[in-house]
Image 1: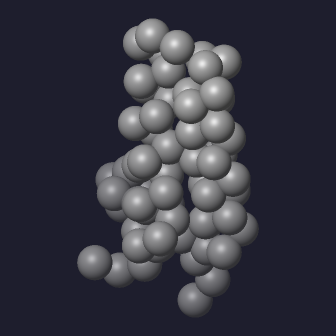
Image 2: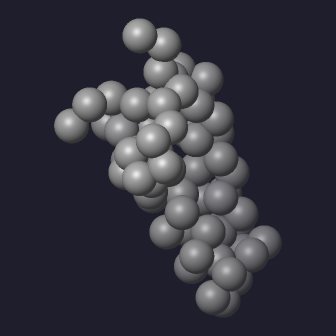
Length: 66
């Protein structure tokens, strides 16, 4: 697994994950949309911690400076 996410990309994903989690747990967004946002928050958080995005691999994209 080769890292393919840069620092800015990882920070943006962490901020979005926190925002999505806040929207869900505060009750601002509920129902199916809330569940989708929560799943996206978990995915964003995990990929930013690991530094690898499988979708980037499929699209042959890398935001990491070599």
